[in-house]
Amino acid sequence: MRVLVAYYSHTASNRYLAERTAGALEADIEEIRPRIGLFPLMLLGTWLGIGTGIKKPEHDLNEYHRVVIIAPLYLGKFALPAQKLIGRYSDRMNEIFCATCCGSTYEKRNEKFGHEGAFRHIRKLAGGKIVHCEPFPIALVIPEEKRDDSEAFMKTRLTDDNFKGEILERFNGFIARVRRS
Ligand SMILES: Cc1cc2nc3c(=O)[nH]c(=O)nc-3n(C[C@H](O)[C@H](O)[C@H](O)COP(=O)(O)O)c2cc1C
Image (cartoon, rainbow, N blue to C red; front, top):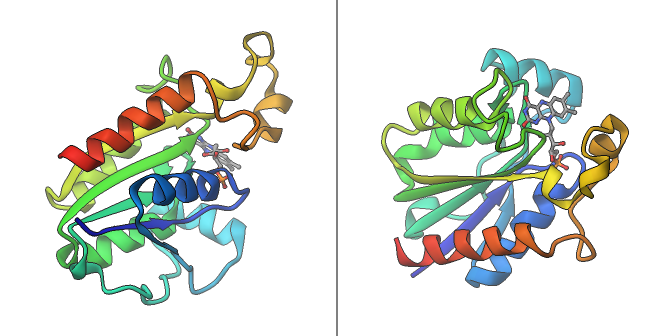
């Protein structure tokens, strides 16, 4: 089974997640490259669902049985480059899985900026091709006593040092799901 991991990341947590995913699945990996790399523009575009496009993917998407798309959430949606990849290329992909290392927690998943709304939105864009979406809240790697500290939230990134315990168990579950679906 051939798998491609396509990711976008600004501060490296989703890149880390993508690299771990590609390693575990022995998959090819590529970065989703926006045409214009201006972060504020990308944020605005994410919110509105419009804006700069992405460069053509380097890999031939329809050669893969599964494409795993990994990106952050901004303002309640998947980052614009991931939206664009799905909106423009979903007809060339077979099965799509999505994952995100996000700020939203499991408890807040149904709130305005929670991951459930972002998953609903991306499922609609993909026209039925998304098999599964998996959240990896950054709170999972923040010590419980610091989870109310917004600075800890902003500063924490996924690394080899903190990718253990519950997040690693959930990651292993996600990998097993992509393999067996
Ligand atoms: C301006 C901004 C808006 C964000 N909005 C959301 C959001 O709506 N929901 C959420 O779960 N996380 C949100 N986040 C948190 C990011 O998704 C999170 O920090 C992510 O891990 C960053 O990924 P990266 O390190 O790969 O760039 C936001 C972060 C920023 C900077």
